[in-house]
Image (cartoon, rainbow, N blue to C red):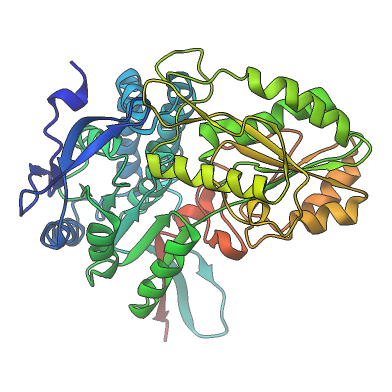
Length: 484
């Protein structure tokens, strides 16, 4: 019996499981079949209020914030260990909920979630203050302290990883958390609530409220008891989050949309470049804010690379996410599939060449779309300028380095980018000119909890991962002691 069959799907508040105050529930759909597999509680305003109060009470009683960083680290190490011990079930849940290939869930999602908590467990005791030399006859020093109650609002595409990138540093710093997962993909968040409890996280330190963004998310965002908001999602919703948080002067970390350019220069190793290019746009069925959906190719190798993609891309295995051989699963929801269809239809209307793909895959009623390569679009096309968030790659030629950089920087986004070249000086030179929070050279999606990532321009601000993330969940207090 799997977790979703035995788990009542209740809210986790103050260390207790409970139904929503009004008894409301919402359906969870398996995107590989378009079928409802279970229901979970749908939190309302009263439930969010209860969760924030539980988190506030837990923060102020010091059962977590009052521990030393080393003690908190020990608990977070247990969380990481429990994730690894329950890896098969977590991978199955993530695959069922999101439509991810099961192999990807185990190798990437579960592994990286465990690494997140392990990394921040190690950083938990590194929040050192500093002694400041001043001309005053005084002892001046700084302390790093937790912020209080953190609202973590996470998206549908990487539920486990993007929860870990927020809860890991928030908990390591001594904060308490109310986590609202995406309404489409709540299952791993509920499972993790049990693991936090089993690891010894005190009651009220982690609370999980499942429900819709307009109701539960909005109530959490506006709650006066929340001290910090950590959000990953679309740029449009991010603007709203920043506006509401700004009214209350709450600090915000926001990782928003992306539309990364992947630049292939004429001196690149084309065999390796093609592998990175395909990974960059089909990984997680293209539902990856740091994916590489815009391919920029030196004109001298443009026809060759298009020909290689035309042959290679249709051969990438697409199908049942429970099949270990599957690389591309379904879109996570029907509305995401429809959005991809609309962009491809627009490309056709604008006279683009569909190199391969360009249509749905009819399989078991699921939300599948064939990986698609599009050429011959103008750079001002919406298909290039906007975030499609599906397995679609646009390909554009360029004549020189300056044009490549200009095209790469021409969209409102700036989350990730990539360069394929064998020229070392060019790699560093171009990396410095790209407007992006992370630049990959001769590969794609090389991520580790030690390496910070985040956006510029419309891709947000603040950083997740690395010591930079931990700093974002603390405040600095100065203490000055007179020595007179």
